[in-house]
Image 1 (tube, rainbow, N blue to C red):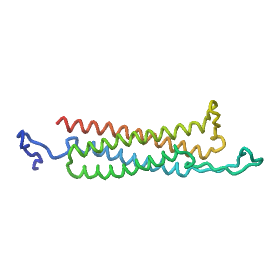
Image 2 (image 1 turned 90 degrees about the vertical axis):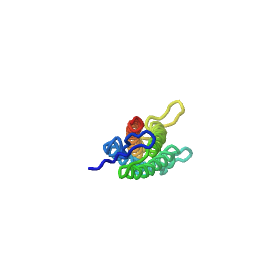
Image 3 (image 1 turned 60 degrees about the vertical axis):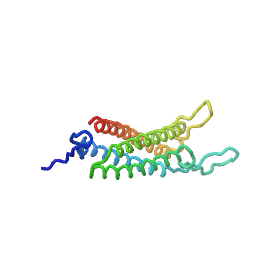
Amino acid sequence: MASTDKPDSESGRQVSTQPSSGGKCFGLGLTLRVLVLAACITAVVVMVTSKQTELAFVPGIPFRVPVPAKFSHSPAFSYFVSALSGAGLYSIIAILCSLSVMRKPCSTKVLFHLATGDVIMLGIVASATGAAGSIAYVGLKGNDHTRWMKICHVYDKFCRHVGSSIAVSLFAAVLLVFLCVLNICSLYKRIRH
């Protein structure tokens, strides 16, 4: 079997053109990226479908009127949907890059860009999850000091959808943490050799 090692023109050492960490790191990274994409799509779909209309008393009106609850009524939930949609789009691009890296040798520069993008997406997904989670918590428990009423006892289906979406988003953030650690280890191995 022919060697894929080539002599380095500057130092005379043999330099391998194959990925130093093998296919295991790239395969695990690709699997994590696919799971992040699935989690982002699931969280967005569940949040966008969170709608419920209930009859409620509105101040100044002596009878009950239908009052809808939608994700678009909260800027935090709208940010959540747009941030996770962006993270899903980034995941598609990163999956395609990972597939091209697995097919042919790549430079450390490509891996560095993927690692940087993963860290940025982690920050965006974590901030969106925190923003949506804080609004959901106020909807669940209310806030006596500011006189914000809890609404989850009235809009139970809506709150279940929001809570499920936030839980899936938190799972995506944890996957991104693992992906960032994997990227750092992979870059360290390449730079060290």
